[in-house]
Image: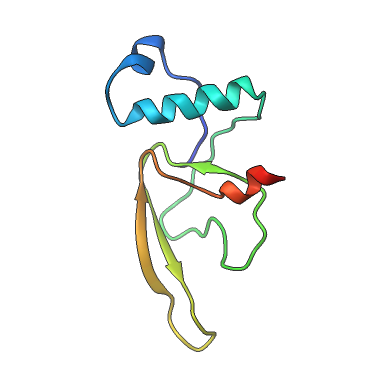
Amino acid sequence: LLCPFLLPSFSLFLSPSPLSSLSLLYLAFSLLDLSLSQTHYSEGDYIIRQGATGDTFFIISEGQVKVTQQKSTNEEPEFLTTLTRGDWFGEQALKG
């Protein structure tokens, strides 16, 4: 599940948990009046392909995302990392 979702409750915002950094991101998005929406992806779905121009900033609220890179067209994609709750990607989309 990837989503910039609704702002968490005030008590969650003050809690010393990994979600606190997410809370700050959601608050920043809200103050900047940026559109937040929730999108679900199934296992095996591609979110963005290498080389594509993205126009979306993603925050992972649940689940995980496997990041791979294909170095040449005749090779299998190489595993780079796994992103989990609180991680984000697509920050280039914020530049406009």
